[in-house]
Length: 433
Image 1 (tube, rainbow, N blue to C red):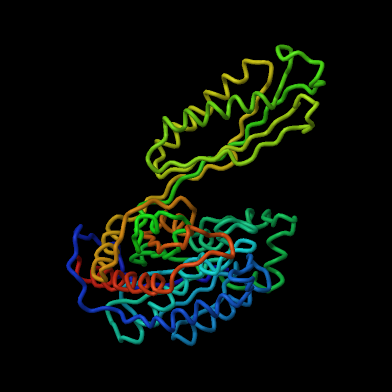
Image 2: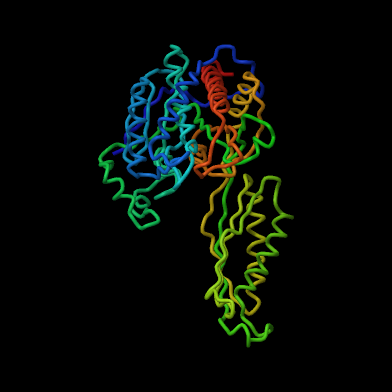
């Protein structure tokens, strides 16, 4: 059973000018209430200064139940759906924006990753209700399992109708526990799934900590995301022959480890030449077997990952990787090349980004445009509706660790900037700006 989310048909996509006048009527954000909710959410699965709140853990589901109740207290029609999403619908009519992120964490993770975007949505939605605004409203969603404990972006893919039941049936965590069993513990299967109807939302907005050092290094307080990177990941398996390392001449060896090192060295050099300004790549895991200092490696495995917001750049790097792999197979060692991840880049809506830029200027907050090198639920939503992401600085660039933190002043400022952008977007959806 699908629990359809209904919307007013007035909220069709709209066109913007590239520069917007300063917004004079703002949504009044309660900074103390915002921080109180964030700190309360951080008590579920608290671990030192961070949280351990992996998807479908007791701590995760307790947090979702609290969030549902908090949404109801704020005037939203809220429920937990069949995959664990927490959805809160505003009772107000008019144009609609949906805001959110995720509240699950990586093991031993930070208190703001994902959670901040959800509480931003809650605060902006209830502030709109309190203001008596009639031009539109904000629905709020906390997606389940963005981090991929069982299935990456489970909640957002379900919301967008992308996820087949067979994928859910096959999904399991790192210990082999099936996703279906985790869902059954909380009797979720009989609930409806929150799923949007195309063409009704004006936009999806997601706020997030940067998870990197660029904003802090550039002394900026707001990051406007231009796009979410695509990811290509390969597993290269070299097969040679194990021999005694002391008695086998170098020219007679079938050395899988040496072949791996040779290819990795050339790959690093060539990727530097072929990459764009914001391309990143990583040789993240190398294994030599049998792994003894006096045995020539018979087998070696290398993982290679690269990310960029341009499909053309990704294609260029992949072509060079495959070319080097073909060259490597002409020697005494065989090589198998397997692509294990392929995600295309997701551009963010530039006009929504302009709205956020104007809002940042309204609050005299220094801002910059930047790509997101990490994946987010926004990359799923961006395939279905106009989508924008906004970053606030991470102290020291740290994330996915209990030391993750952001200055309270930056958290509150970010919410005020995004609230001002929401006001502008809702107004623009009505008068056609």
